[in-house]
Length: 352
Image (cartoon, rainbow, N blue to C red; front, side, top):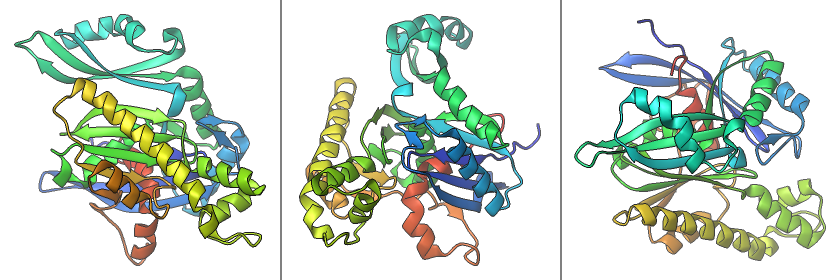
């Protein structure tokens, strides 16, 4: 069997596009990766809103620009979707063969997926089997066809081939598994704070125990600042990132930032409460933050205190080598939390 070819990971976020390309080789019976391309391109405000592409020309132009500037010859792309267009459920079924499961999954999905079944593409994988109990656990994913078509079309519009469509939360876990083997048997909460959507995935032992997307992100903080001080979105964003704007000091916005922190805490706590309904023995041991707003000052210490566990920033390049003559280490480590999903996508291959 021939070697599987790598894909370019393309994370189409609400405020920017993140691109990662990796090369891979076998070493001592394991796959090792090296960074070969890294790109970040801001998008116009509201080009993508909560996962829906509103300005396909702006998005396709940004993709073209990244590929041209980085001189990427590989046109095969992996991307992902999230938000209300995706439903991910762990379901318990009677033990059956893979063939029987494939035949019955459509019928089972009707009972477990809130989205109209005729409007979604289904995917699934067997999580665990319990022969002595005659049961099996299956992860069932449903993604709206119109959202898949929209993302596929914009990538084709940019002259690229869409080979693989993933889900943000799964891509994030893929990057986590490749870089944090020392936490494999811990219960870890991955929290990816995008501009308008936050992905939460609670993982343990390589298994996604619970995946949830919420309509909350960096823009929530920006909107609070914008309304409070009657600023443009751009000026409010600048103030959020620590610059003084129109005589307003960043220190003044801390009460608004704290409101956002509390709302995020509630969503994480609710997700953990959902988990405890199915896994009464599981205790959260660590939270790992990623995404553009993961580095807001005070967020790590706030969540660590609230959940009584260590909180750290995600480094998806921890086990990925790179040429320090091409990539400045300090810059890469500074930007690392933003590229979690893109790295997870770039780890996929044609034929996966």
